[in-house]
Structures are given as C-alpha cells and as structure tokens.
Length: 352
Image (tube, rainbow, N blue to C red; front, side, top):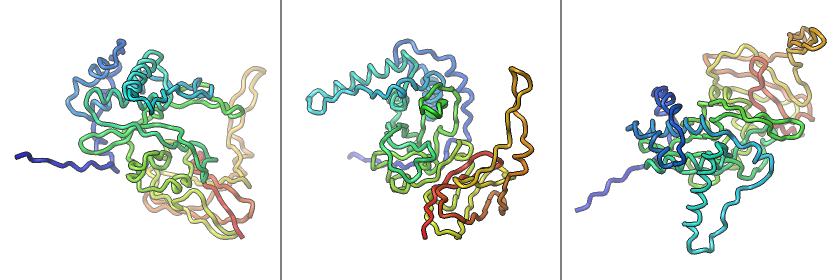
C-alpha cells in the first residue's frame, strides 16, 4: 500500500532564519572562484553546507559579490534576444540551450541586468536541488510612480526553504546605480551589499515589488491597483524600520482645509518631523562655500536653520502620529522628512 504525505507550502511573513549567523558562509564564498563550469560553481559553493538555508545564502552572497549591474546595457535601450520558438516542437531544447549560453555569458562578463541576476540565482539553486522560481514583475523606485500603471520592469526570486517560500532580490542586494538627473542615464554601479533584500518578508517587499504571476500576487493579498497607489519610500533604512503606516495608501483624495492624520511605527528614534510639498520646501541646512580658489567646504547655513518648519508630533513607544492640514487647492504632493532626511512621499488630490 502506498502512503502519500502532503506538505502545505506557504509564503512566510516573518524571517524564520533571522537568528542565524551567516558570517562563516559569507567569508567562505570569498574564496570560491568560477572556473568556467557553473555546475561545479554551484557545488563548490554549497556542498560543505548540509542545510538549505546556508546553501541559498552562499549562492546569494557569491552573486552579490561577483556580478555587477550592467547599466550600460540598460542605457542602450536594447532588449534581450530571447528565442521566439513557441511554435517549434523542440522549443524546450532551444530555450535550454539559450539559457545555458546566457548563464555562461553572465559569469564570463561578470555583468547582468535583473533578469540575469535572478536567472543565475535560480539556475545555481536548481543544480543543488533547491526549488525556486524567477518572479518577473513591477518595481517601484521613483516618486512619480505613485498612482501610475507600469509595465514589467524587474525580476527577483522566490526560493523554497524548509517548506516556506522566501523572497530574495539579488539585483538590489548587490548595490545601486548612480543616475544623471539631467539625462536619466545611469552613470555608475556601486557595489554595496543590502541585507534588506535577503529573505525579505513579503509584506515588506510588497511596498516596492509586485509579481506579474497571478499565483504569487494572491500570496501578497494586495491587488495590483493598490500596489500602484503605495507611498514612495526614499531609502532602505525607511523600508526596514517603518510599519503600520496610516494612511495605508500613497494616493490621498481630500478637501481643502481638511486634515490628514499620519501615524506609523518606527524602530528608530525621530527628533524632528517635517513636511515638504510642491508649495513649500524647507531650505537645505547645508551650503557650499569657497575657502580658496580651488577648494570648497560644506557648512551649516544659519539662515536656513531659522527658516525650518517642524511639525509637532505625538510619540508613544515606537508609535508616532501627527496631523497635516491641507490649505491649498494646488497641493499635489507631500513629502515627509525624518531628521531632515526624506522618508516618504504621498500624492495628493485636492477636491472641492
């Protein structure tokens, strides 16, 4: 008689491995070299670790250490030359061959876009029998995206560890790009490991990421239209420390002279809260002055100090709250700053 055992897989909303120390794994992967064989690379990275979570960490950290974001390819406006073989009987073999060459090219050039990062991570996990999926979807990274529809522009990964689906974004964990604000072109990739994107609980990730596949979207318990209306968060530090935000939408419709009540939980201590908008911005506290013909230095601006406007707020433990009165019909965004640093942005629609 055959006995079948059924396991229910879930998407974890916590970080079940947050207490683990990965320092030995992170140190070990520094010594692992790619020797023109990605199957060998996968085993070199993982064979010494019996637990899947350490195998996944080794693959994740090695990619972060060794692959740079291919910003020049993004600037070129080109697209990947993926075979269009859906109507061919050997399409599976064609795609397998293309992917094999694609992975080899990434490892040879040490460069990738988000699609490449996520496919490389998936392939190395697959070789050592760790189940996972590439998740193409939507990434929100700009203030103007609040309330606007988007096309698919990013990829990250779901990986199954001890019956829980966990989420990683190898691309964003690897570092960031510096952008020329005048041309909107990327000018440099800065390698800077971001731990936030390692096994990120999906309710946190859903602030900025939304998967195209309907199954994964269901796990987020968040309609795509709601995702479009999320507030904009200016930094990983804000994303990592804030929770229980109210309003829970970044697109606020309100009448003139009405009050928006803001509240949130924040793990760090906040001394000052300010609100900037299209109607008024607190001047920068810092200015550049010349100290010689060739040298300048940044100093505190006494005039700007006197012009700062602070909002009174209530604090109970880690819970903060304050009110903001809408005084002008022309208001179309508000930007909240914690201790002079931009934290969140909301789009405002003032109606009569």
